[in-house]
Length: 135
Length: 108
Image (cartoon, rainbow over the protein chains, first blue to last red):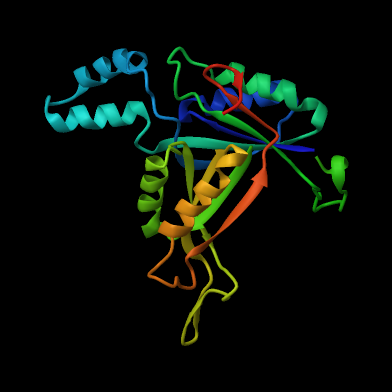
């Protein structure tokens, strides 16, 4: 038994839910979290989106510039959705592949992370089944 | 790899995150949670508050960085010199696999 924790973009939530159903793991727990990733060292990756965001700004001052840069390079916390999915060992690779396929964008950074944790036991409350039968 | 889950006071969240970033651990996930501890919440007269707001900071790190991260969190999440009830807890669990969605690559 494994617990798969995936932190994904807010606008990819429904795509992720559909992908999970398609792969046969319909059950999940999701919550709203704040997060940040590794610092972006190669500024060229975020240069283009920085330009688009700056063009949207009302007035062009030092502050806007700082906020936009922080927002893109990973120093600021921003909203993400965290999915927790319990899975049988054998299903883990295909669930991971489904989540990756559903969440990949062209932006190169900020698409999220997937963690796989071991689970000692699980119990279904309704029937008191435990172990693999409970998932 | 290991996952460190630190439950800290909400007002210590900013400083802990800042110090973690300065120590080279920028990536983190933060959730606002409520909970109680060994003291069974806080009691004022007849009223018991047992859903005390805390911040849960989750970060996944390599095994060899464990001591560094623990040191940063323990030092900066503490209230005063000796600490106080309600400063929080740190839980550590093993992680089998990690994937970055942008690159589909395994590993941190």
